Length: 213
Image (cartoon, rainbow, N blue to C red; front, top):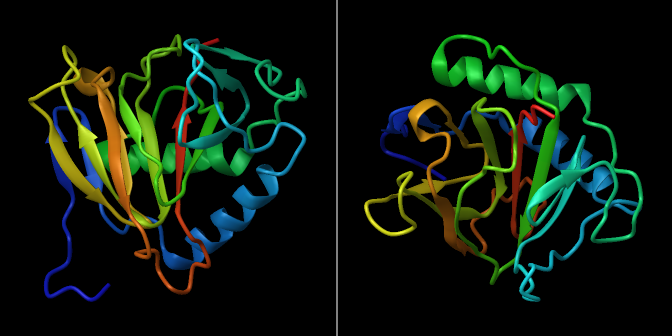
């Protein structure tokens, strides 16, 4: 997208940093192709059923550890039962790069979880906390494909105050410290806004975490 002025990095809240256009186009394409391979069965992309019987509109899969509502396992306990695929070294290194870019210093722990969400045209994510990990290391979020509205809130309530941030393909968002357990969600995506050369319809969100398990 052509811009009159470059989008600048922004501290959305203490410990929460948005770095626009962080991942170059070629790395976006490489990461997308890797995600397509990782998403294939076994232990591939799946629908998630909540404890109340509802289905999340976002489809997802995990690497390193398998997330299910609300915990982690080494097998896809709510799916095909297969062992989860290992956390790739390149994603652990990407997490380290991201935290260093956001905070100016490398993380103390090694990223061992990748939770990858796919948003089609109508998918969204309600306000929630990432609190199933035993570690308080920062969460790293990378966007590929369609632009979304990322709603970043506070640690006390799912309601206001919150800040809506536009996340485009290649954007990085890192949240840790005081904001590690802030509520956040994706109320909507903008269909058809992915970079033409990427070859993706919809949005992929690659979320890197430290399990502490």
